[in-house]
Image (cartoon, rainbow, N blue to C red; front, side, top):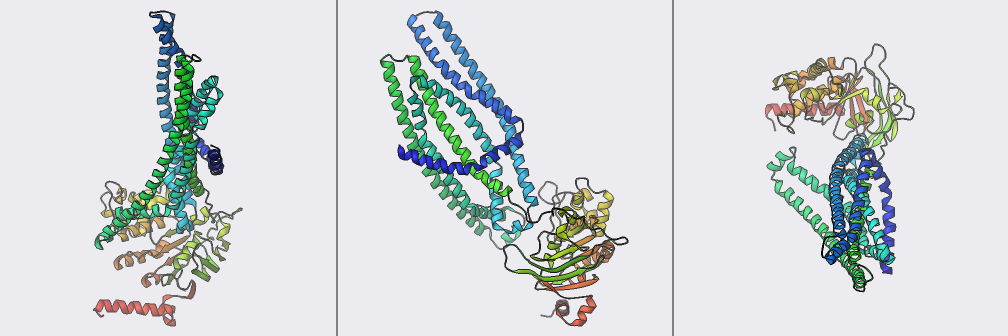
Length: 621
């Protein structure tokens, strides 16, 4: 027994250190559930007292029945028996009513807590730095947080409710045992110590296993996505990859299942030993009370009360300790949620932000300047930008060309302040963008991303999302569609601008990659920002569509500052100036004709592309 007590003390000490998240978890539940928490606690308190009242009435009821049988007739004891029986029936009925009410309140609370936690995760996911999404550690945090968010707070709520209700009942049971000997209450507590040790030990082992296997769980989810999502569906079928990924998924899940089964068996054996110990102690106490009843020290009513109180006390003690263990277990996993919610972005608003610049009178654009900018992506040693100096005057259309990995898209990401440079500065009309609030800075720009999002919404919503919740007017949306050359596409759709796009929902119409890109262009053009950023705007267009769009582009830009990142020379030729990037810096700049005359990287690439197109057109190898 001393060894068990020492082991319990060690476990409790470790548990106390891990329970640091409990106050925050309970505060989260309270914030989500509001005053319903108080109603729920009141119902639980009354429910906890009712079983004790029934046990308390057991002794006079049994003694009354014995007296009635002994008198062999109807007397005062008979009416007492009926009154006591009626009282017990009323208590049982009240208990059922309270249980139904508590269940309804608990369901309401659970949904509110679940929605509240989901909202916290969504808020954090949409505000953390873009750099977080390039970290495997962040994805582990997100996976664990999303996995626990749906049920851990709710489970904690139910565990806490059971703990309160059973705790009140247990205290009442222990109080009824004290008159028969204080040591019986102590024995009731000691009989549950092995179970508490088992509960705490299993909770820690399960939590450590879940932490260790997070990456494996994510990989299994990735295999599941590959086999069920639409994006990889065609390639899996063409190359016959389905059997490979099915086998990989099943192998990984089988290993995780074996490890979890081993944990469960170990826990079951430990619970068996703890349960047997509790039964032996209960048998010893019951034998002692039975001897007292035989010798006449206690009545049959006392014996019945003791049996019910002690057996229920043990059951409640196991439930109570199980609840403590589950609270501990769920709190451990809620630590994953709080770790995710506590991630702090590094890209923040300045303490005293300066107002975003506005175009000077008679102008629509803003000057953009990169001064000696060095940048590496987080977690990478590779230099993305190296001493970049670049000035784009207000109202100019600039194209940035270069090989893959030259740093072209990185320029746009730093300008939007998705990242901050390691050295140097990025300026907007002479103001370091780190001195401007993020909302105002990003509001002064509009952008077509290289891989725009395909929103499963109507055409109008796809174009006008930037104006939600107020929504853009129909005229603005149609003008943006015309600017992007998408009006013909919309006219061919069954419901025009009200056509639902995508295949996630019934009745949706899917588009080609180029058609989706046109809608994304329209979305970018809808925002009347002084700076336009386009990352490969014509990459998914055929040559006819590109030619049509290029004819419109200068009127679209209309004096605004524009940066076009592109691999297509036909697109770059429309710019006022072309900047050639190599190794994270600008190596030459000028108009298309100027660059061709210099016979440097741009001219060589142009000639190679023209030669390839000539060979393709004339069937040369």
